[in-house]
Length: 120
Image (tube, rainbow, N blue to C red):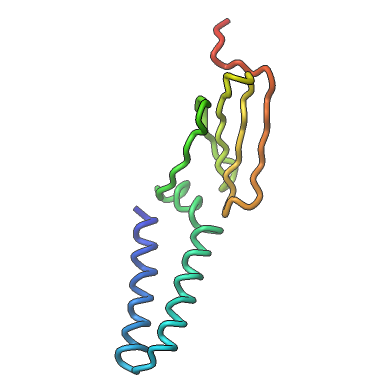
């Protein structure tokens, strides 16, 4: 819900700039440049800073897919970073993958001979 409110706010601000600078002041070139910059700043702020914060703290929206051939085991948060554990039965390994802000610095931990589906 918070994610949708954020994007509604960004679109409203861009619309206000287009209306104020473009329609009222008749400076369409400036209005388009400022609107484009606002969209770029809004997208960058969301992707590199706000996305996981919204999801974790305020119930935002985020989608992650499990790779083909893997089984999902668990998901956990470490600060504002999401860690997902999947199991690959072909290689018998568990893979922890980090989804950090902006997906720039992603960690990956591989556990060999994991076999989480085996019962004792």
